[in-house]
Length: 162
Image (cartoon, rainbow, N blue to C red; front, side, top):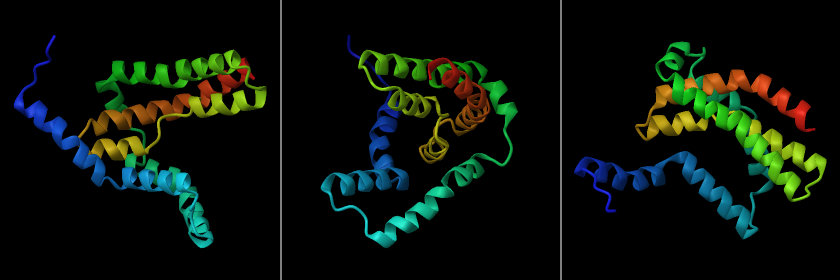
């Protein structure tokens, strides 16, 4: 079956790659991966400076989303927020734990993998949604719900799996 799309949809999809290529977040990720894979790494001073900035990343990301949770935005997109939160905070960590068990990965490594899988969506998703003309308000609602819910879900997952 041939997929049909309007000219506006085609143009929006065609313009996505150049927009991604211009995003500072994407450029930083590509440069980081290239430096890591090449073995060059970062100069000592740059590594320390980046470490200082990295410590401020979460608070700054949360500030970009907003200083207070936007519960009105949650109500407007409740179903997608709940489904995405359920999948991200419970199903993904459980699948990660299952994969670790099937691969006979040790308890400590499994705990680390489950913790990383159980983390809420990164605040950089909001920044990218805003830059790319996506549903930034819905992403802010998703981040609000997941950040609040992760307090409970991470504790439950760790009690159940570790």
